[in-house]
Image (cartoon, rainbow, N blue to C red; front, side, top):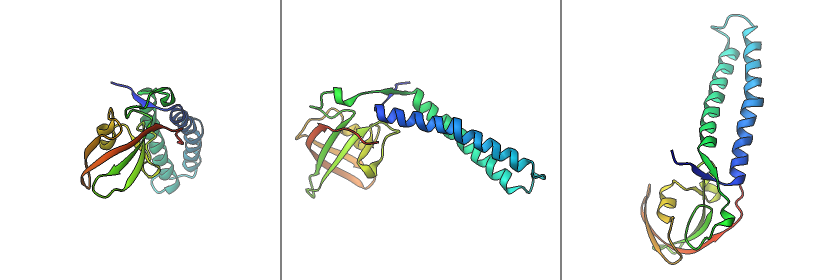
Length: 161
């Protein structure tokens, strides 16, 4: 399996979330289960069932984040040339039809947050942009239909995760 790129800040945040789940939340939830179990009849014990459900969620999240962590490779985009769109590039696009400009930074899957302009490297838009240069046009099939953008600027900016 090919490793997914991730920034140093993203990998640290991922590691912190994993640590919190394993070392804080899971032990607390196991304790909640033990306390609820001591209250007697488990069939009608809502606290017990809620704690068990919470533990299942925590275990699933640990597995998911563990896979992400194991299958990621830290990349420092500040050391890359951004003459073409690549991981870590901040790209300003202009909608050819409306003239509206938007700016996105291409990040790893875990780091993506479209509301903050951080799009995953595996998103349809990012996949179409990778390798392109300024002034090139890119046509992308998006959920709302086909859109054509011109790449106005490609640069590197520090990424806030």
